[in-house]
Image (cartoon, rainbow, N blue to C red; front, side, top):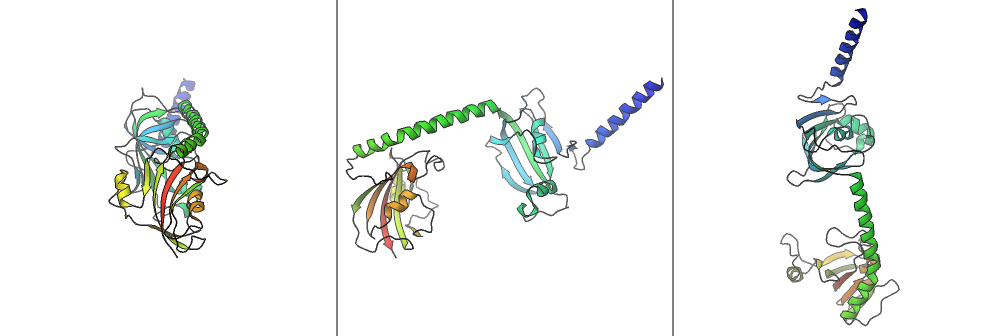
Length: 307
């Protein structure tokens, strides 16, 4: 009888301790032993759970206390990856491991914990230490990209990059042949076709230049232009941007090397076409959605002024 009472007492104490560990001072929330506050708006316990290395797909709104910082509601995509261990006790990683596909949950992370990890000077200006501020992650989990699927994607990406890199020399050679280009490339593979020779001052480091340009891929796809009519003809016209020459001081603006090398020494009034290999352009990284990796570029350039 005494042993039974002792066991019951221990179970009661354990239950009380468990309840205390799950108490949150945020209304409607519970709290993990590590200190993460959580609230499930919808639960689907039969749904797949993410594992270490998996990426969550869905909708998320991120708030710093009352300030909304990010939201992709209405546009679900990949949002967060599950790590083996969190960066600090009570971080969002604990919450991600709790979720199932089909769940909708809100997690609250103590802002002071984040500040201790990244440093107070890295926090937003409205952060106040000790004020009980929280970071809220409102997550609607719709799918999971597994660690294995990510590895396959990466392998396919590398294979495609290698294919594009290997194909580039032939693409340039075919373009040169098809367009009857007779000039020879320089040692770096840059082709410079002078369509019109100017007679004004010449481009040099430190000079202020104004340049009109239109950029295309080898297949003719236009990705940028400072010339309004070209932009309209190429289907990239944007009424919100000004169409005017690009003005900058040579050597003080981070332009691709092929552009810089191509116009250097050319005179005001010159009109050029540059065929730029990817090594002098955007290389393996490409540029946004418009310029894939290992893309040679064609620029039509007019040097409007050199001062």
